Every structure is written in C-alpha cells, then in structure tokens.
Length: 617
Image (cartoon, rainbow, N blue to C red; front, side, top):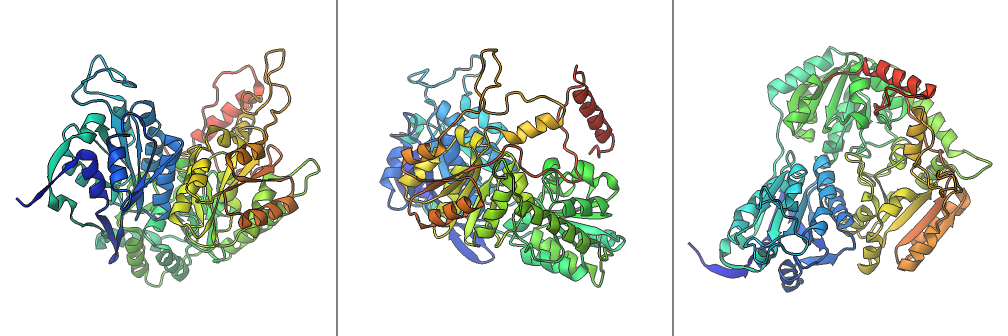
C-alpha cells in the first residue's frame, strides 16, 4: 500500500474530479470542468468548504435555481458532445428534489450529468434535521431515493471510504456512450466533513477511453442485404450521429448510394441543408418532404436514435410495411420495432455499411427533388407572411434564420417553437442547433443558454422561449450577468401556452386554461389578456431589453443585441396561433371517449381509426 493523504470526503471528491480526463480518438482532454450549485445547510460547510479550498483548480458557479442550473450543466455537456461536463450540487430536501427533473432530462437524452444532492445525517444525530422527510416504514430512505427512477447510477456515501468505489462507478457510467445519463451521488451532510486517509493513487490522473464499437460482419451483411432488396430506403439520423462525429460518414453513405437523409431534433445539423438528398426532420414536428419520404420508404435505417414516437412518428409513419434497420450503441434501441440490429458506434456502423453496399443505388428517381422543391416553396411562403393584425411567429423565425450567422447558436426546448424551428430552421454549422426534445422539458432554455455560453464563450447564444415558459423559470439569466457570460433571450409573447391551446382546439375542446386571461365576474377566465412587461423584468435584473412587433424591428433588435456586452432579452410580440401545422403524421393524445360535444366525439373517432393502423411494438 502506498502513501495516504488525510482529507474530508468532500475534499477528496473535489480533488478526484480535477484529475479525470477523457480520450476520444487519441485526443485527451479534461472531463470535469467545474460545478454549479446552490448552498444550504446541507452542503455549505462540507462540500462548500472543499470547493472554496480548491477554487483555483476547480471553478464553482453559484446558480439561482437548482433545476435551471442543472439544465445548464446538461447543455454544457451536450454542446461539448459529451466530452466535458459540469457537476451540480444542492442542499437537502426541496433543493435536492429540484434536481430530479433535470436528471430525467439528461437520462432521456443520454447526456452525462453528475449530481451531488446533500442528504440527511447518516448517524441520525440530530434527527429529524431541518428539511428531512421521515419514512415510517424505511428509515434508510430519504427524498434522494427519488433519483433512482431517473438516473443511470445512484449511490449514497455513508462512510468516507465508500467515495472511492462510488466515484469510479460514476465515471464508468458518465463516459459510456450507451449507458450515460444522470448520475446521483447522495452526500449526507455529516459525511461530507468526515476525514479519511485516502490512498494517494486515488488522486492520480485517470484517463477514460471512449472506444468506438465496431459492427460485426454478420450484422452488416444482414443490413446490406435488406437495403439491396429495397427500392426506396431512407436514413433517419439521430443524436448518436452527432456524438459520434459521424456526419461525414453519413454524407458518404447517402451520397454514394442515393439514399435520402431525414433527421431527428437531436441529429439536426450534421448534414448540410443544401445537400440534394437532405429532407429535414421527420416526425410529428417534421417537414412535409421528410414525412412523405418516410411514408413511402420500404427500408428505414435508424442511426443513433431511440425512435421516440413523437419525434420520429415511428409507430404510425413506419407502419406501412417498411423494414427497420437500427444502428446504435444501445442494444435496446437497435432492436426497436423488430429492427435488424447493428450494434455499433454510428460512424463505424455507417462506414462498414457503406462498403458492404458496394455499387447499390436507391431507386427514388426524381421523387426526392420534387418533394424538396415543394417544401422550399412552402418555406418561401412562411418567410413572406404579412398579417394585418400583427406579427406571425413563423415569419419571425424565418427572419431570425436569415439574420443569424453560423457563429450564433440557438437553444429551444418546449412549446410550439421546437416544431417551428425543426421545420423551418436551416442549420449553418454542426452544433449551431441545440434542442432538448427527448423530454420536452420546460425551463430548460435559459439555463441551457448559459451552459452553452460556458462551453463556447466566443459564440453568441440565443434562447428561443415562449412567455409561458419564461414565467416558469428564468433565474439563470441573473447567473449569466453574475458570471459575465452574455446570453440572449428571444421571448415570443403570445399570451399563453399556445401550442397546447392549438392541441386542445384541434381535438374538439373549447379554450380552457391554456391562455393567459383575467378571470371575470362570472368566474371564468374569459377576460382580456394579462399584460406583462417582460422588457421591464429583464431591465430590472440588469439585462438589456428590446421589443419587436414586426420584421424590421426584430432584425434591428438582433443587430443591437449583438453590440451589447451584457445579457439581452428581445421581446417579440406575435399573434397567437401563428405557428406551423403538422404534415402527414399522427400524434396520439388521450381524447375523451365520452363527451356531450360532437366535435370531441369526432376527434375520438378519428383517434380510434388512426390507432387501429399504428404498429403495436
């Protein structure tokens, strides 16, 4: 046994994190770049003391809301293609529970997120402590057990020496392309300050290797045989293509064999929108040309996607008899929808498949070009919408897309905006388009913009957000001012949750509880729109605010925001209901089977008819 060093559990934790590296294709870089958090009695004198002690080696950024700061950490990792992370901490009880939603968001999207929620005293002295929830049936349980459902690895450190195995397991998961997601290391507040003689080798520089999994020859042969027997194969490119740096391999496969490419939200931007076989995103929020192509395909090659039914519309759109081929590092995802499984890194799998297809060429003929031309005409109409009553949301997005340069990144997550940007936004460089849509998590946007700015300080970042989501959470706007990390918020004010309002009305229901109106004397929310001055809110925080009511004002606001050195908020007043509609897809929602309204009865009948056609597994 070598030499030891006496440290508290918290000190040992921080020291360990400073020594973790990742190697991708021979390039080594530091993996854990710091921590964000909010201190409370559960972590301020334990983990907080350690962070203060090592502040010259390991940055700590105090956030303003636990959920949003953890979203910032998730976005930081995502923008770094999962090769660099920031950890997050919170105090016990309600602070810790605020980390549960971002844990779920990270795990759904397979983004590494390292969480250190504080916990109650392991020695139970005193007990119950402030913010402790007692469980009569299991006194070993605390609110931190809630993380088990949303994390890929969970542990509780009740003795200082347990930290060593826990952190090695944590790093194993965080650096695994298949299993990565949220990792929760629960830290009882007394244990954080307890000391132990840790072996010095525990703090040696440790490199974690991201090794690319090759496909087997048999799997590639099966996939190639299926494609060679098809006339109209299509590729759906998911987030795994991005994290594998597989855009070039995808292009080579598509271009050589004439196979058109569709995307998911997570995969968007890895192929140029100018490429002749590019069709945009498929799914409920997809383009007309992508959905039409997928509906006509006889083989669908799903690369690096978990085939979320909403994102890809797989259960309905893929139900026309197409054979699925899944290329994925996850066996579960590769086998979905009875697919031919190619268990492999996206880049390695597509490179091998390209070679196996030899001289094969798909038989789409002029169909892809025709669909692209039709969609281009529709986009041109969106770009020139003029409404007498106000500003169209789709026109605003097209204006922004035309104005933004390749060095300006957008982040979107919830409401109608993801649908609009998925259909209309032309991505000018990989990484410019940052979407969280695996969980469609509201409040992700502004925290994520801050995380992206930390990851790419030399680029402008813009959070596209609705007024409803802004009211749910925008605390990290203040953190961006504190840290002097300029972000830009483009706030679309349409007086409520208009995405859900549209869904409500499209399923035969009346407007109820989805728009922001005053309650009248009759007890109903049928009064005037609530008038909120979002620009004043932003200015009160110290941000620079702008307001736009038309195209000219919007472009001028963006140009002015670029010149600012502090965070900005651009309030865009848009007409409710002026978002894009769906194209050749079906989204199942829980329509009422019994209703007095004929419109609801009709919506239920339509749903039942569509459900009878979808794939059951």
